Length: 111
Image 1: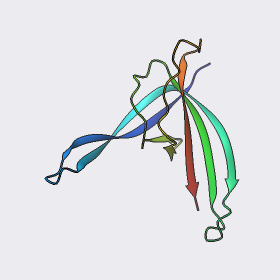
Image 2: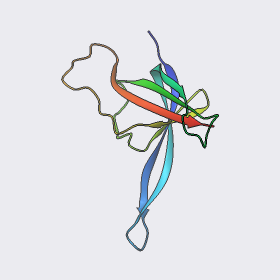
Image 3: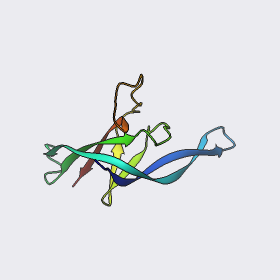
Image 4: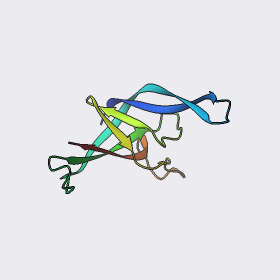
């Protein structure tokens, strides 16, 4: 089994402004061997967005990827930018005998 290549976009602290607020930059990185699983897809029930849809995916990150927090990150798959849900953590204790040890849920809303 072989995964696909995706792009991760994360925020990185670039410094602080004079008032003590954090200044953020974004950083993109290519990650190979990511398993991509389609999740639920539904039409929006919001009356303001009658043509809206919600798309969810789950990706499984390879054990070889050096873990860092994905809170606030985005994942680009096939040119579509998805938002990472929460702050997923890798499996610990060697409970997974495969090459993938981090499950990440993604979401996108359009329309």
